Length: 266
Image (cartoon, rainbow, N blue to C red):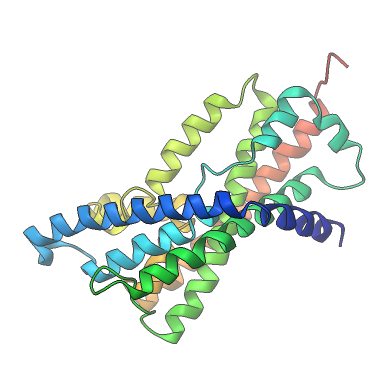
């Protein structure tokens, strides 16, 4: 119940930034349309050589932009980094709650509040765009249900990864290097720059085994029906495996950091 309270407070705070969310939605819509035009240029040359239909790629882009706040690894809370660097984390440690679980709940709430404000304007416009530039409906009701499941797991995976970066910041002088190193690689490996099906088969197979693929690639491909039933089952199992592994590693490192943390020489 106490973590639910942290979730509710952070969610309510996030919903207050409506103008910022609207500005972000406009930016994301422009970026998404630019990406679609780039894909269109490549598909016009030889559409038969691509692993996804152009409509599936368009849906991938619009969903990626609509739910950017859920899956973008670079959307971390500067407040947490500032708390660690300044030493104010000592106040957090005095609370009768687990610092990892508290930050985890706050991160989920912050991402959900931003996504709620941004996704509806983007999807409302994308739905009414003429074919093939608009978002297509789900391939089937089952695909939509699986999309919701894999999107929820993707959100948890993304938050678990961000928590790992927060916790590792306890062991560094500055978290800037960690953020640059982890975020730049993660966005690429998660399909945030190029959808994973566009990579060579051997490279794609390896990338799909990594935890990053489960952050957004799986959910966005499931929606458009570009994955077979066997691929979906394998992807969901990998999401669950990596979620447990990354969360377990984060909690273990957090307990170690709490034992060894030094604040102002004390």
